[in-house]
Image 1 (cartoon, rainbow, N blue to C red):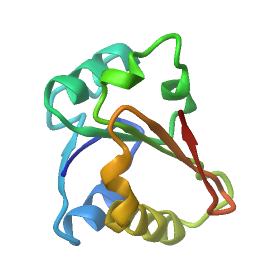
Image 2 (image 1 turned 135 degrees about the vertical axis):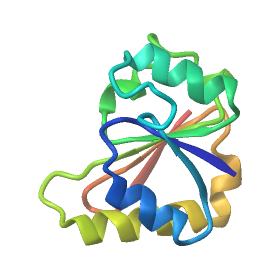
Image 3 (image 1 turned 45 degrees about the vertical axis):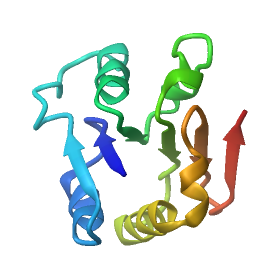
Length: 118
């Protein structure tokens, strides 16, 4: 699985995923660190990558063609330590259920609960 990290996802989290063997491209590495959400989404879609972000704007089903995406994972981070966030990200991407993310939005809430659209 290939992952594309939005510009709001700090290198600490990218390295946590890479250390677990995940292929992660950062927006900065793709020269998209100052790009719009639409450009970020389009890049992930055209490169068959799951988009990971802390930005709930990507959950806007009217703005983005989610069914044609390879999936979006949004993590709520407010009030959580970076270690907790990194642990949740790694656990999320290791989950066998992740195979079903294509065309969906999965939100990992601060509580750890995961919601999915559709």
